[in-house]
Amino acid sequence: MPPKTRPRKPDGEPNLLHGGKQTDTCRRCRFPRNKQDKGKGKLLHGIPQVTDSAQLRNVLVTIDRNLRQDHDLMNDPAAVFMMGVLEARIGGREYFLIASSGRTADPWIREKHLNGISYHQGAWESVNPTIPASHRGWVTIRGEKVDLDTNIAGVTRPCSAMKLLLGLGGKRLEWKSVEYLRMSEMVFVGPEADDAEMRQWHGKGATSSWTAHSCNACEARIPYLICDVPANQIVD
Image (cartoon, helix red, strand yellow):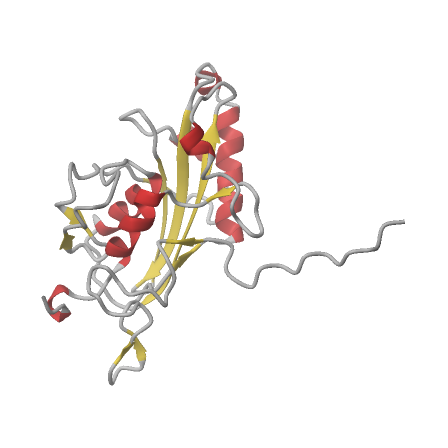
């Protein structure tokens, strides 16, 4: 009889991080993302890192189920895209956003695909902002303009994570305290889809084998967009 093995201890880290860890140095302001704001007793970055959550993963499960019951979508067996959901509480107000990437100009996810979402039912908003055509002209979640590194490969990819963050930044919120910002992504791969690149982002979560991790282009872009340090505090 083979020896008994103990169950693998769950990973102590959050299931997935999007855009790096809070111990990284911010690419926009060049401060450590977990740096304390002197004299104020809080972090300089309101969002030092972006994690996912079980609740958001369940929202994606519901959307995926609705998508697979959509006969029009199922008539395109080669369909492949990333879907994402974001929740944030900023200045005492909550925001719940949904976006999808893909080869079409119109979003894959429509209002009918949101049926049955029990987590904050009725509060979800679909966003589909235009992705900048180069490394210039991006907007942070605070609504401030920022140019990205010119060496980022795939900087114009219309990924769901980019649409979520740009959608939040496009609201031009009055920036007060940030309680949290969380995001989860999931790959939709049709039965005849031939997209090896998309498939590789599927299944890297420690507690959820189907949750997607962000692509390399998003990992490089997210740190710029989640930086909420005011522009007048950044020294060139």
